[in-house]
Length: 404
Image 1: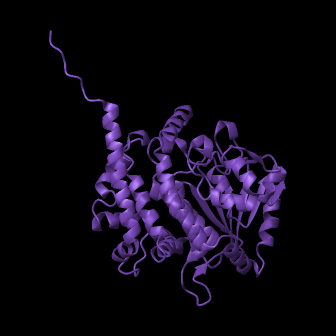
Image 2: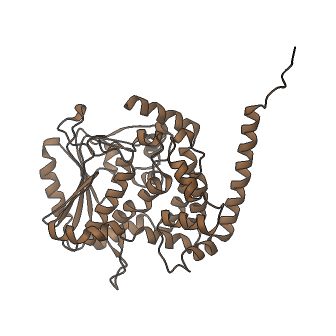
Image 3: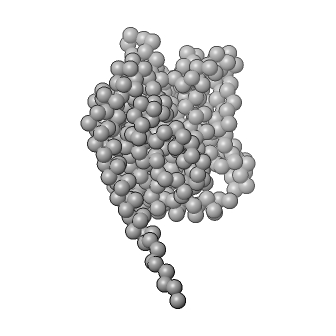
C-alpha cells in the first residue's frame, strides 16, 4: 500500500502570500511618502502639466515600474468580477494617498481635477448653440439661464456607475463653461421601473450589480466622482481666465423625488438649496454595503451633527424628508404635486447678484481645501481596502443576485 505525502496546506500558503503582500505594500507606502514630491515633479514636468488621476497612475506605472500596477495588469484585472480580482487597486490607493498628502503635489493634483474635461470642451459649441446635450445617464438642457441636469437611467433607478460619473462631469463642466447659464438644477427623471412607473426618482446610490461584476473602479469612479464633478459643483471649474478668481462657480439646486440613497444623499451635502417632496427619504447605507460613503463622513457631522451622522452612516438610519433631523440637509419640503412650482421659486431666489460671491465664501469657511485634501488622501486608500473586503464582496454578490 502506497502512502501519499501530504499536500501543501493551502491556508498556510495563503497566509504567506498575504504577509508577502503586506511587506511589499509597506515598502511602497514608505517609498511614496518619502519621495512623493519628487515623483510628482517627474510625472508632471515640475508641476507644469496637469494630469488627471487616471493619467497620473498610468504615467507612474511607466516611470516607476512596480510602484503601481501596469496598464496590462489593470486591463486583466478589470476584466474580472470583484471577487476574483487580485486587489491591484489597493496599490493605486497607496500611491494616490501619498501624492495627495504631499503639500505641493496634493493641491496641484486636485487643481488638475477641477479643469474642464476634453469631452466637455468638444461638446461646448453645440451646447451653447442648441442648449441641449443628450447623454446616456444625464440629459442637459438650458432654459431661461438655468441648466437642467436630469438623471435619466430609468433602467436602474439612477444607480451610479462609471458612465453616470462621466456624463455628470461633462454636464457640470458645460453648465459652468456656458456664460449664459446662471445656475444649475439636478433632478431625477421619470422612471419606467414597474415599482416607480411614471414617477421621478432622484438616485438609488451605487450600482451594486456593477460593483459585484468588477465595474466600479477606484480611480475612474470612486475617486473621480469625489475630486471631479462633486468638487466642481462645490468649488467651481478651474479656468484661470480672470484676475479676480481662478474658479468659475455658480449656484446649484437639487430637487429630490422619491428617494436619495447613498450617493444621492452624498450629493445633497454640497448643494446650495435642496428641495424635497414630502414623501421622499434619504439614506447612506454604508454599514449595509460595507464601503465608505464618499466624503459624507467628513461633511455630515458638520451639517447634521455627530450623533445623527453616526446613526445614518453606522446604523443605517433612514431620514424622512419631513422629519426634523432631515432639515439640516433639506432646506424645503413640499407635497409632491407642488415640486415644479417650488423649484421655480427657489431658482429665482438663487439668481441674486451676490449669491455667487457669498456661496464661495461660505464654502471656503465650511470646508477649507486643505481639510478636504487630508480627508480625500486617506479615503483613497481606505476605500480601496474596503472594496476588496470579504464582507463587501459577499454582500454585493448577494445584492447582485437579488437584482437579477
